[in-house]
Every structure is written in C-alpha cells, then in structure tokens.
Image (tube, rainbow, N blue to C red; front, side):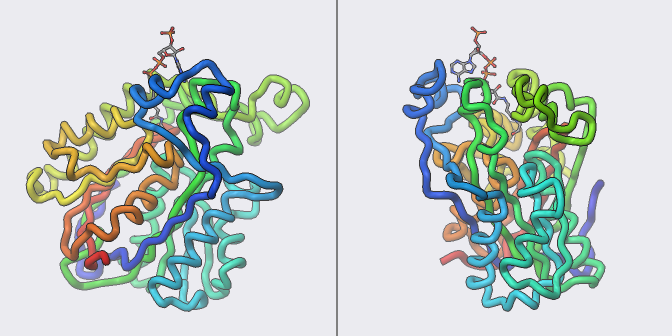
Length: 336
Ligand code: UT7
C-alpha cells in the first residue's frame, strides 16, 4: 500500500526505548556453541545483545518501560492515549494482546489497543496503521510500540540463530499536524511464499504445543539464513530506493537511513543503493543485535539527540513473512 501526503499528517512527537540489563556477549555465546567473536562480528556486525531474565517476564515488561518513559518525556497523561498498537512477534501470551497488558499497566484507560505481527517489519507496519487513525481524525494520540523478547523463542544450541537475536524495544507518540513535518509516504509489502525460510514450526493453531513438538525443538526460530539474507538485501534496498525516487529525494536530502538491524551487511547494501554514506546510517546492531520489532524505535531513541526539526528520514525493514517496507518522514523537533 502507499499513502500520500494529506492536509493532516501524523507526526512523531516523542520516542523512548528500553533494553534489559543483562548483556549477552559474543564471548559468552562462543562458550555455548561452536562460534567465535570474529565470525559473528564479520558476518553480522553484532558484538553483544540484551536478554530479559527472570520468571514470568514477557515482552510487555519492555513495552511498559518504554511507554512509561515516553509518557513522561512528552508530558502526556496515560488517559489521553486514544490507541496503542504493539508490534511484536513474541507476545506475552497468544491472547490477550500484549498491547492490552501494556495499556492496563500504564493506566491508559481510554485507549483501545491491539497487537500487530509482521516479523521484523512490525514496527513500520504498526507506524503506518497508527498514522491512518491520526490522518482520518479518529485519534489524537496514538502510541506505537515495537518490542520483542526474542530470547523466548531462540534455541541457544543453534549457532545459526542464537548469535543474531536480542531483547528490547521502544515506543513513539503519534499526533496530528498540519505543518511540513510528519509521515509523508510509506510502501509496505508482504510475500507469504517466504514462510519456509523463516518461521516457528509449532505453538500456533496448525501445530499446537505437544510433547512431540517440544521434543522436536519446534518452538524456536527456524531460519535458512543465506536465503533470507538474499531476499533481505534485495528488497530492503529496493524499497528504500523506491521511496526516495517517488518523493524526488536525492541522497544529499536524506538526513538518516533508519534501517532494521538484522545484519550490518544488509544495512550497508541498502545505504549503497540509496547512495548515502555510513555517517547517515543509524546503527546500533553492535549493542543490541536483532530485536525484531524493536530495532527501529531503539535506533530513533539512540540518535534522537542528533535529529533536527525538518530532517528527512527513510525507515526501512525486512522480516519474516516475508514482509518489508519503507517509510519517509520529516522529523518534528530538535533533539537535546
Ligand atoms: O531480521 C529478520 C530477517 N533476518 C535476516 O535478515 C537474517 C539474514 N541472514 C543473515 O543475516 C545471515 O545469513 C546469517 C548471519 C544468519 C548467516 O550468515 P551467512 O554469511 O549467510 O552464513 P551461512 O548461513 O551461509 O553459513 C556459512 C557458514 C556455514 O558453514 P559451512 O557450511 O560453509 O561449513 C555455517 O555452518 O558459516 C557457518 N555458520 C557459523 N559459523 C560460525 C553459521 N553460523 C555460524 C556461527 N559461527 N554462528
């Protein structure tokens, strides 16, 4: 789908993020599986990732912390929130939605909320969904959360996946504006033929949990890495380039690429296709790995102090589904 600019746009008026304290280093992983710091850094760019430890700690823990910080920063009372969309692939429970749990915890008593699952593109899909509620005038304050506890579905004896993923996330506030800032355009895509290459085999309605599924280790991320890599490089780069072209944006006009953090080599390929230098690429994969729905708000939060009102940002992602997309927006405020 494609949105075009209208009189009333949705604009990001604040961002906050949260990562758990526990740092899982490459050295610690190398003691668990046959891998090395050198292999992980060269092939992915990841040095460490965060892990949410403890009993009964789900993705909502990350989402609640991010939303509480966001409300404080934007001086918003929780009951002012009209809608909260939580993008996640690792909900606390199959139901009810993690968004409902977050709203209850932060006191967002006037909001309706739901979860959105689009793999690593989840935050972009949720951002665009939230923007529609603002553009139509239905909502005035929409919180979009992107958060995942990937460690809940990672097999720490599988070196092909355990080195990549981490836990974390963030949240943004969307509000209406008629000024020259906000979400200008979006391109979102899905291709269900990607299912065989990246999925979790059991735990859903097709193959509910059983002794057999647990014994067969089917409740973990299954990924054919090099196939996913090929699709990711092509589609993320193409969609980022396409959104620049259809908005008449040259490389000099883009202040930052905000890419999903799956693999530094995918990010480099996207920047190259856009014709922008590494100084314009938000990067924190070395600290957090791939937090799935969390990567883009985590990037915006980490780079917030460097952003200026009017900056043109291109957000881009690729993930399970396959899903992919790009969003072009103009930043609303000077970071401190
Ligand atoms: O965010 C959602 C979407 N996901 C992605 O975008 C991930 C895309 N894929 C990737 O980032 C990369 O494919 C990986 C990082 C997962 C793997 O890197 P790769 O360069 O594609 O490696 P590969 O899977 O082609 O494997 C190359 C070799 C294999 O050994 P042989 O068969 O050549 O002897 C693997 O067994 O590297 C081996 N290998 C490892 N070696 C050391 C795989 N994982 C590891 C490891 N440490 N952790």
